[in-house]
Image (cartoon, rainbow, N blue to C red):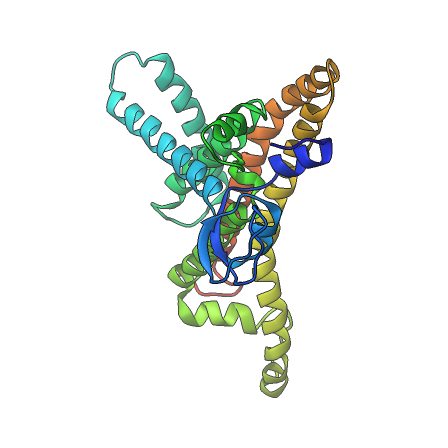
Length: 295
């Protein structure tokens, strides 16, 4: 484990990484790897020696576990649903379901059987991944260290690989919804015939490359901003928790407890923002272009 405050902070913000170290990389013991090997990194130099193909095992593990927990809770709620008086558990689930269902009805004007379950999944999955950060920062990493793991970061949304993978999944859905509701021709037109338009055919052809660059940049900016917004907010919160834990004595509680109470609002808010922006983007992708004939 870390000895100084700086090492402590770096340790708690480092992922358990499984990757391929390049030949010539210095190991934690001081020896040098003569051949490329797949290993779990146990020190900074081994992390630096890994290339692109390195996996954050802790982030993948916790996002998978919390996703499975979401499926279990809602499968249980579905089995318990009946016409009689609902239990407290079902009442809570129904409140969230009705809230998200109202958001979908108010925002998404097209018809889709996927959009409701998608928004429900996005909200609760991110809510669970955000909420796990309220566990004391030393509890899970300390247990992992006792089990022989040098690094173990347990908040998936503090890893940009997780938030960006979710947001780029939204990008693929945006493209799919646009093609489904407007056709391939309509999707291509949305990238090439706006924002600059002209009734002159020659000028319209000249404007196509300009429109394409602007629209592609705008299309890619949506998932990048969506993922980085969630990562930035959650990373900042986690960093404050780690800083508080690195303090001495009662200063830990003076900083950590008010920040934890504040995060009771931040945790669901960030899940809601990601969900509502996903809903808005998919609604925009499903909308008919201006002037399109109604079928």
